[in-house]
Length: 243
Image (cartoon, rainbow, N blue to C red; front, side, top):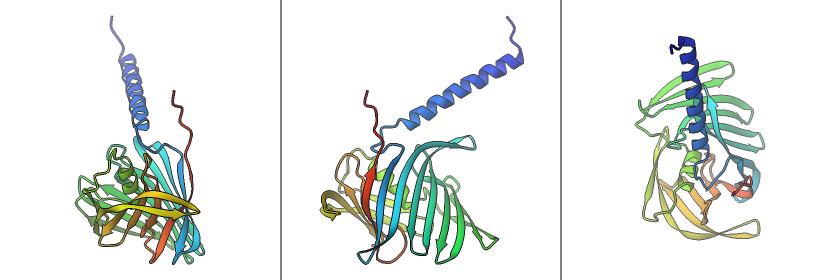
């Protein structure tokens, strides 16, 4: 029996759609210790005093321009300060592919778009300031990282090798993240058992809950403001059906 080209074309499209949907579901259902909708709320503290609030959200898998990405959002608000970041992440590597930032620092508003080409070793940056568009391309052998992507990559490791260090290549500098010790952290009247990591050079300090989820409890240095910490104030995660 002969088949028309239109029927064959429709069949190919249907198979492609089903395979694409299966791939999307498989990526969405990876055995991560974090699930879509997980939100970590932080108090922004400067010199130990609360100066604002922030939230880190894992939104799960989304499609943009025919490609699938994990979508992470980070939002920080303080007096005369706003930092909104939409981070789109490679679902296989958990490295950033695209970062969209909306900033308002003491009235100076700015939008920044970063796109990462890890294969070419390029980071393309477009800044939109006062109606002007400024473009630049940085050359950097990858994979190039983002501090929030690193948090999720660390969390998805099944077991923590305390002798292992992690290289974090940021667009403008490289740091090495090293395990320091298991530590106690007191936050909001609670005492947590934590994994404490620190960067070399000493720019970042990270405390993760020493449990299956490895929730990031405190982050020093992520906001790029001296003596500023993100300290957990609330944690929510959707209930997952265990059937």
